[in-house]
Image 1 (cartoon, chains in turn red, brown):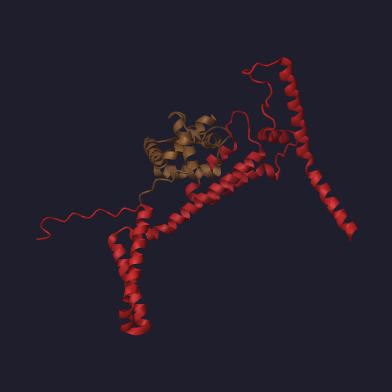
Image 2 (tube, rainbow over the protein chains, first blue to last red):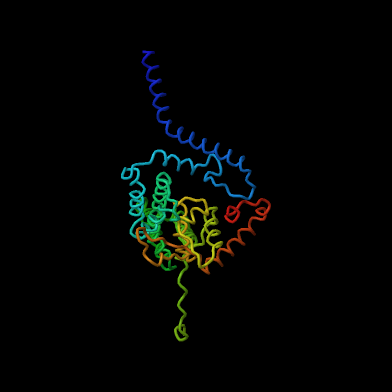
Length: 227
Length: 111
């Protein structure tokens, strides 16, 4: 039993080490480059303002490391990993909804980088396309929230609508109390109706302020009307 | 519904600073904005959408259809955006008098 557990652990460790061999090779190659660069700089005694001929300026750099990984172990051209960023971008554009349908083209252009000859690595593209998914979810969530808020916005847009709402709330509260204990109960708990109406009124005007809804200006009365 | 001014979060300030730092005839596209602000597309695009709705930022498509690649969408800050952003920044600094004591690196510093 103990022997089997030890063997399983050994297998696990071996598998883990095997999965690490590619990054380790990439790291080692980068290290060799860095050593060569050091030797070059020392031999030719570059002055501080002079730009190094080597691409790798700092060591270790994440982007250079990823680039070396891709150089040493190029991903398959038509493999699923290669296609995934584009597919994810399409999915993100679909998720964002028809309002943002045109974003797909801009996002696909984003995936190509700045077109100055340095294409983005597949890993970087994957990260970016996952970012598009996040953006799509946020855009969709905002759209859904706006749609849900529209009826409430409409209800509080005018004072007359708020007044109607308050009357309805008060009437339903009174009806409920009367059903529970007749008019005596209504008379007894009338202050609760008042509190409820006050709360709904506060919520309506608070919502109006929160959403920045401006009530329409009052229509000026004609001079002859009040006589 | 009158759109409310946005909350001046760190990300929003970074995007607006990047947009105001560039010349009007050289608008930025999404990738450049992400590189300049060091933010991900998941943050930058919703902010750009919000600013476009407010009228602070306007977006235009690349004029000609390039061969072999999709068109870029360029973003530039509008006159209204510049004014509102300047006012919002002044109001924010007035609210936070201690902010000048510690200067955080801005987008310009990173360049």
